[in-house]
Length: 208
Image 1 (cartoon, rainbow, N blue to C red):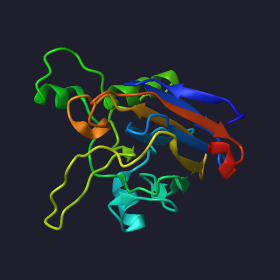
Image 2: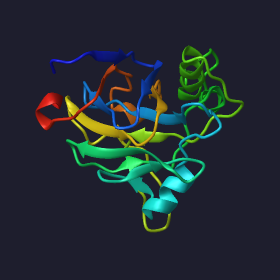
Image 3: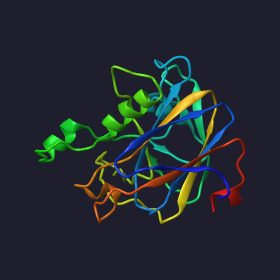
Image 4: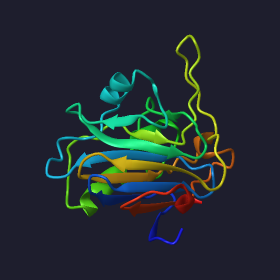
């Protein structure tokens, strides 16, 4: 792409300021990296992306092209206008946290999407006393008829991307998930960088 592309480093987070009508192209550079995703309304950090309301409005437990991320005040925040892999992105699992890694047996401090969210907010001069549920882009969480969920490697390949359009002025916070114990980031269990470009317009050829 002949545009300004930023990197979200493996196991780290980053915040991006977006105006209504702008586009975020999130490129899964290596094809197997989950990206935990949040939105926070400009001027009111208390209005955040809400997976409860997103599932309710879309009448779906998955997130796919054409759907909108809905805020805690029932307003559209982001719309997915393109998805090169046409996969079902997860809205069910929580962002990983220090407590989760302790339960998985980690005895040393471990990066987490929860930490990345709050560090991204701090980078933008914001703070929240809680961690909203995340939209888990590229995360592959099959759900069985009995309600059982699984955690399997992403069904994407290197270079796959999604494009999100901001429906209001907001801060977009992304985390290149640090999970390296389960295969949620691929069988290699190795978090990887992803690329992000914020643009005023979107053309399919720009993301190739």
